[in-house]
Amino acid sequence: GNSVTQMEGPVTLSEEAFLTINCTYTATGYPSLFWYVQYPGEGLQLLLKATKADDKGSNKGFEATYRKETTSFHLEKGSVQVSDSAVYFCALSRAGDSWGKLQFGAGTQVVVTP
Amino acid sequence: GAGVSQSPRYKVAKRGQDVALRCDPISGHVSLFWYQQALGQGPEFLTYFQNEAQLDKSGLPSDRFFAERPEGSVSTLKIQRTQQEDSAVYLCASSPRPGTGNTEAFFGQGTRLTVV
Image (tube, rainbow over all chains, first blue to last red; front, side):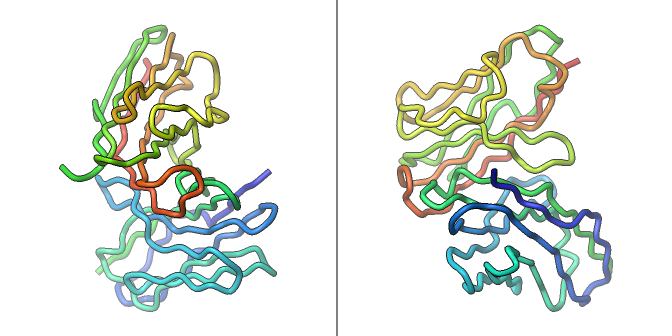
């Protein structure tokens, strides 16, 4: 079946540091891939997405590239801020499914210190 | 408000009690999804509605879980005879299009259920 594996947290880093959160997936066909973010006290929000191989999703300085050959969708940001402290979830939607029916990873907590 | 609203935000139930969790989707949204998120885990899909029709209930963990959306707007997730393993955050999401429509799903803040 489908699955999403992401690096365990918490990840703690200083403001302006480089952030990478690894995500790999197992799926048949060509799923759509997503990163969701959950800020403290808030609901899940879509951060970025990519729908086909080699697509790059980007938003708020975050980027992730859909790599079919390595079945990966790693999240990166060049210079994090304290306000980026949150839990980040990698997710996939099977080809043909609604983008609302998602398979999530376990989440990675990111803590950015001043 | 303009977002997905869930109530109650917190619910404590004694083992064996029945509970009902409510979701008010964004007005006009056709699709509605329920998820269960255990502590420290990612959300797990439970069920999906398109308008009032429940098209996918493959994620419901047992027949104690029941969801409905009788008028195609508000939805209720009911859990009968709650057990400790039902303790989790229950998330609701809605999206404006049906089925395979490729549009973002918007999540509510969830209901935290604790079974004691």
